[in-house]
Image 1 (cartoon, rainbow over the protein chains, first blue to last red):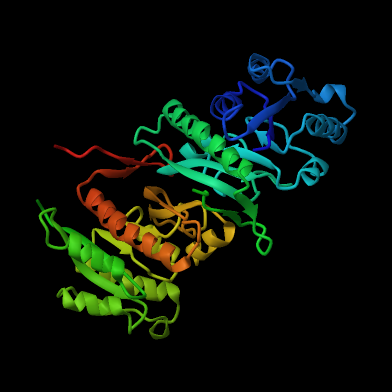
Image 2 (tube, each protein chain N blue to C red):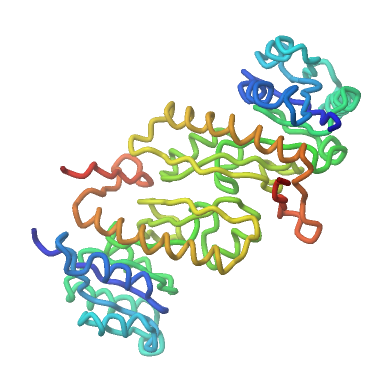
Length: 209
Length: 209
């Protein structure tokens, strides 16, 4: 099987990057993490990349004239690294429309809610404030909107009666660490496509046995 | 245990009414369905009420000068029937603010989606069109908005890869027929309250053992 190159963008601790490194990188599925990019020079995700001998680079806003220029430089670097798929794993910057268009349906994001509920920042806090009993995790393709692209996978997470934020965040993170690698594995296997008739609908083919 | 009177409003076939009759009416929890009201004279729900010897009445819009008058007449009838709780079970009319205010936090609705996603009509169709992988059922208190009141219970229902509408509707109906009686049972047992500090948050006390 030929190598499927995955690049990861992260702004923070990079636990979702670690889940991909642990569960997919260099395993039999042929997935290789080929690069990690961050907007934050001190992001712990960069350390995790170095720990796994994966090329890492930073693209701080301060070093580029504007977002378009920053994203263009990052896109060039990601293509050079051999990225077939770009995974946003706690990447806190909105990507430019040019970047999104250049990698159409090749960028995915993991969001800590069952979209379309609770898009945007602090989805866990939004869910607790709204009083829902069920929230969850969504992996979706990235389009020009905020958490609005076609949905690939979702998994529900119950909100316990005490509504403890730390407990709920832990449960959601555990779910992310399972669901995001699962989505990458399915995409790498060529099982995922966006319906040409309805661009919101993602088709997942059964696994060959 | 004293009797807890439940009135049901229904516009259609009344399968959720039937679930309440089958699972709660006259059982040991002390819940009695004391009345069934409909805006539709031909609603099958009315037949189900008669079949269970439950008083039934119709309040068609055509027989009242306006919605406020219709809802006031219906409210009088429901109070006279001894309703402690009013359950909307496929009731397709928006209730007047006066009606909602008169029975504040004593009206509940079952909605075929995980609110706040897919409020309003055809929630199942909305979910399929949006391409979600998880939808579900919500039981919530009714306020002046559309499917916007405090959430009591939610349960997730997966959307199968084929996105077959009939199959998904069946799964959602089965979930409704379990979740709605469960919510009524908890309310009748005095276990459910709306948080006075945050009116969106519903507290459910543990069951006494």
